[in-house]
Length: 94
Image (tube, rainbow, N blue to C red; front, side, top):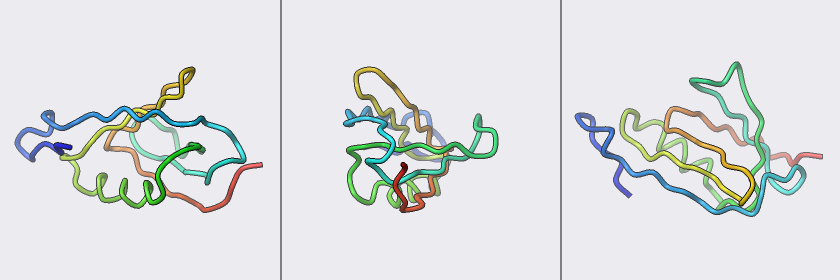
């Protein structure tokens, strides 16, 4: 995937990932923060590859370069622009 460049960050890739769902209890809790999110937002994504949150930190650190991601499961679409920070707390929802 193309992360763009400092001169042309708009030339980066956008990835759409088909995921199992956004089910509470089946996935670790992600705390999202960044532009457009007042304070933080909790999100659980079932079916993400192991280590995605760690890889996302690398993607976020490359700003303004980086890849934007959309997560989709047939009924819900969640956008993760490269400006969003993800902290995985390791617990699972109830």
